[in-house]
Each structure stands twice: as structure tokens, then as C-alpha cells.
Image (cartoon, rainbow, N blue to C red; front, side):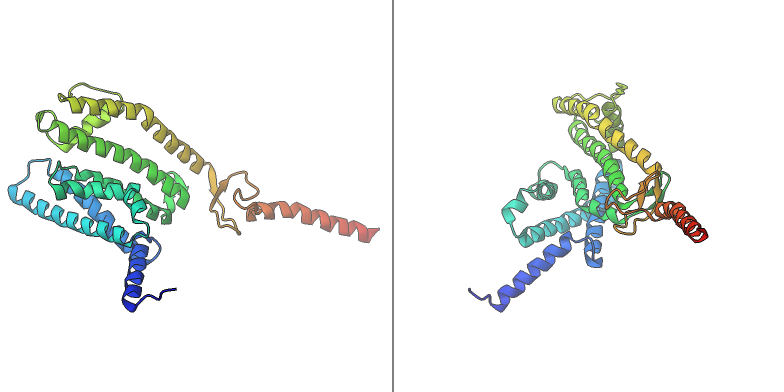
Length: 292
């Protein structure tokens, strides 16, 4: 077996370390890296929305410089992820890689500005939500429920955000009186996807009308399903009680549960409740035996 020289060992160690921290959400360094990426995604999306409004030229120049810096950081991040990946072909064609590449290629190649699609990168960060749990207006929410709630709400938000960005990019050059700002596009997207269709804003381009058809189909097929899942999670959460399983540490159980639904361990309060009558019967039997 051929031994690696010190330089190759160093490069291999660096590649493994970099790959670990770029995907890690457990250690402070991994959390910090992913939180910084999340903040940059949010900032870049906010810049895109802001630039659809009438703002001073100096502010627009500043925002463009900030966004350019963010895109440079995203490009470096993508190259580092690709370099540290063990199976580069598999990584290149993965969903997250294609989204990352789509977010930076239009800028690098000078094509149409669709940088708002970087919002999809948030799906990688959603794993961090599993570490958030606590009281909400719906009652106690476990870490699993937190991830499900956030995923559903974020899916709805992302669908509206992306469609609004697309329809704005398509319609604003030809129909700026109706699609003047990003808020106009959001208003049109929500009205279209909920099948309300007030008719006060209508697309005039062929691509815009095609996007409108896609919005309607998405609203009919996907939105009711996501909202139905959200309502079911809310009902399920409010009908459960907080009772920690001593074995698997599951926090939420049904109100009438006697055993943990994950590991089958008897729940502490219910087990104690069931043990009281048994102990009384045993004590009564001992008393009767002594009397006899």
C-alpha cells in the first residue's frame, strides 16, 4: 500500500475538516458557519426586494456592492463544498449543489438576474430548527414538531416568494404600471394561487400568462395540502400532554397513553397511578393472611 506524503495527508485532513464543518450543525463552529450563510441569504433576498422600489442612486450602488460581495462569498463557498466533496460528480448533480450553482451563475455570466432563487438554500439550514423547542401559542411543541411546522410554513413562503420574483422579472419590463414593485408581484401571486383572482392586475406577456397558469395549478394542488398538514399538526399538538419518557426521552404523548409510542416503556405518572391499586390489593391480601 502506497504511503501518502505529509503534504497529501495535510490536504486530505483539511478537506475532511472543511467538509465536516460545512455540513455540521452540532458544534459551535458548524452552527456559526451555517448561521452566517443563512444571514447572507436573507440579506441578499432583502436587497433584491429593496431594489424593486424607487431608492436613491447612492443607496442602490451601495446595495449592489454588498450583493456583489455576498455573491463572491457564495462562489467561494460553492467551490469549497465542491473541492471537499468525496464524490464530486454525485455532489455536482445533487439538489443543493444545483440550487447553489443556479444562484451564482447568472451573476457570473451576466445573465438575467434571478438571484432570489438563493432562498432555496435555506432548506439546508432547516435542520438547525430541530434544536428549537418550547412553548408556543399552540401549546408545547417538540423538536420534531418544530421542524415540521417550520418546514410547512417555509414551503408556503418560498413558493410565494419565488413565483413573485419570477412574475416580477418577466412582467416589470413590459408592464411596469401594474408590476411596479415586488409587493405588486406578491399581491398578484397570492391572489392567483388562492384562486381569488381580483383581475385588477393581469400579465400581458406570454411567459407571464404561462407563469400564471403554473401559479393556479400550484395553488390548487399544493397549497391546500400544506395547509392541511399544518392544521393536522396543530390539532395533534394541542391534544397531547408533556410527559417525558424515562427511556427514549420523548416529550409529548397522547392524553390517554399508558406506554411510550416509540419504545413501549410505561409512562411514569400512569405507571405510578396503576401501581397504587395493585399495592393496596397486595397489602389487603397480606392482612387477610395474617388474620387467618
